[in-house]
Length: 96
Image 1 (cartoon, rainbow, N blue to C red):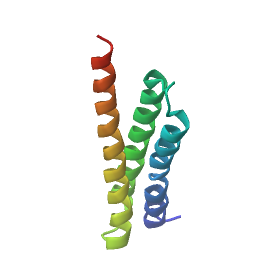
Image 2: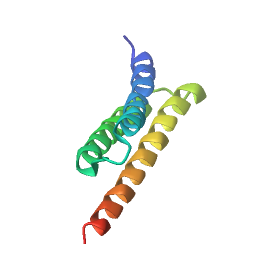
Image 3: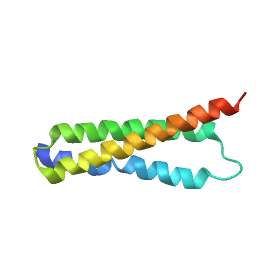
Image 4: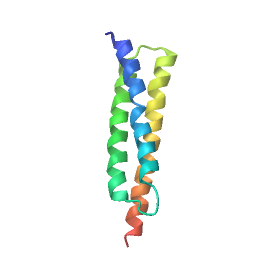
């Protein structure tokens, strides 16, 4: 397997943690939402997705489509990470 094909596979698999975070949100939402359970899931999956997408960007040759897959993975995982930190901030403020 060459580097370019591995980069595309890693780029596509970097979107899986985003899907995991979205499905976890829809499963755990409601009046009995426990942020202490959801926040680590979001953070770990987002960091794992960022690692996969950065490796994908590093391995791909300068091809627009292949770089687009890795870039979408970086942007989506950063969005989940920022939203998680905002949720963590709100959770910390509500404990007072």
